[in-house]
Image 1 (tube, rainbow, N blue to C red):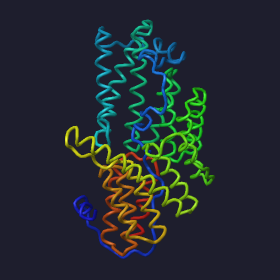
Image 2: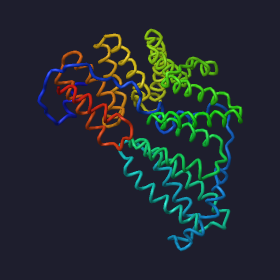
Image 3: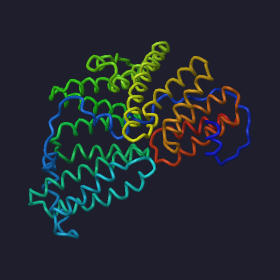
Image 4: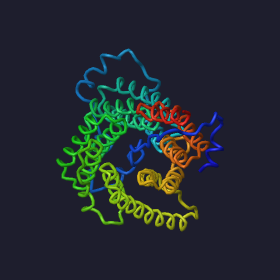
Length: 397
């Protein structure tokens, strides 16, 4: 990892021995699954409605849309062509969304949303097209929220998710549940715990009305995690009762159990749960590698989800004064993420602190400086940048 940082870093600073212990980053800055991929797996048999009944404008937006913007016009009268064109664009954008292209995706999505808005105005009295354009508008806002989350702009991500929930009457239960949970997760990342709790409660009520037990259990697990950070730990064991031990979704639950044990300083239990989480991930990863080799001969990379567990193990070893093992797990966590992402910045900061505790001041400063540079590239509304600055100044004292 030190070689990678040497290649990544271009700044040379005056190096001074550290004088005190800096601050490890314990709060995971990204949700367990990017863009809700975890929730896309079918926990239980879902009701899948046709595309044109996914959502409709709330009555207020429906009645106001024509009067507010009736002077606008659109470039084409061929509605079916517009629908296919925009749908294909949204599909392409959603598939290709990642940390590297999120800025360009935001620009493209805003342009697409403007096209859809004008089509909604133009077809406000033509229900056969209005429903379809409403679905496209909803999808655009949701993907915009995901792109903002990747940029670290959590405030605007929440705003887009809230627009989806308040300006549309969403009839498709799977999508509505996913949207509520994603909104809750972004609130958790940005430490808006009160709003996070409300979104998770809304998701819980939504799934209870549908009697989707696996989804209910998943939301309860998320609430357990939230309660743990609010110093009100609650056992997150219910989710394990519904799935076999080898199911990868159990790995997330073990990670949350490990995190809750860490918060209450029960390090033995935290180690045990974290190792169980890794074991399940690795079993499933090996199965996927074997399947992938049989199909195209290409091995699969380490799962990004493992970075969360490795980072937590690094923190656990640091808290039990085993700094060499802590460095190892921070290194492993770094290998699982994109090198210019917020996760990478978080892990580099932790790795740098471990180097400092091992009296490797030069590597420590390079690691934390690089983490600071990555963090500043994001419109990050969390306090990661402030922690990085504080830790870096500590190293320079």
